[in-house]
Image (tube, rainbow, N blue to C red):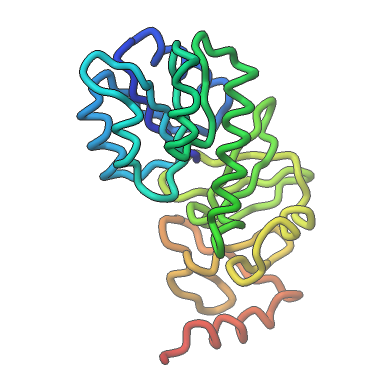
Length: 233
C-alpha cells in the first residue's frame, strides 16, 4: 500500500487526485484543503508521497516543502508552469501542471516508485508489484503475514489489510521474495519469518493469523532453521 497525502486549497483538484489514486490502485490517500493541517499530517505520518499545490491562498507550497520529511517523495501540482524551476529546486520528484491528465499522473507515480526503490538502501526490496485482476497492486512486504497457493494463483494475507489474490505460481512468488525474510514451509504456504509467533508439532503460529500453518514433510528441515532463528541469544 502506497501512503499518500494531497494538499490543495481547491477541492476539485483534490477530487481529481483522489480519482486517479483510485484508478491506479493500492493507494491510501488523505486529502487536505488546509495547508497547515496537511503538513501536520505529513510530518507526523511520514507518507510515501506528498502531492503539494504551490500557489495556495494562505501558503506557498515551495516554502512548505522544506518541512517534508527526508525520504518522502514530493510531487508538486500547480496551474502555473512558471513555478516548475522552483519545484525542482526544492528536490521534487516531479511537477504536475494542471489540468492533470491520468497518463501524466501515472508517469509521476512511476518516478516516485523508482525514487523510493533507489533511496531505500537496504529496504529497496521492501515492496513487490503484482497483478490482481485488472490492477497492479503494490504489496509492502512488511505487511505480509503468509502466502497460500491456490492452483495458479496465490493468496497474500496482510496485517490489517485486505487479502490480495494474484495469478502467479508459488515458485514465481518465491523468486520475488527476499530469502532472509520469507520461508517456504509447505507446498502451499510461504510465511514471513518476522510474523512467526511460535511453532510446535510441525505447525507454525503466526501473529494476526487465526489458523496454524502446517509444515510439509519436504520442508521438515525448516524446524532446524526456526530453532536457530528463535533460540535465546
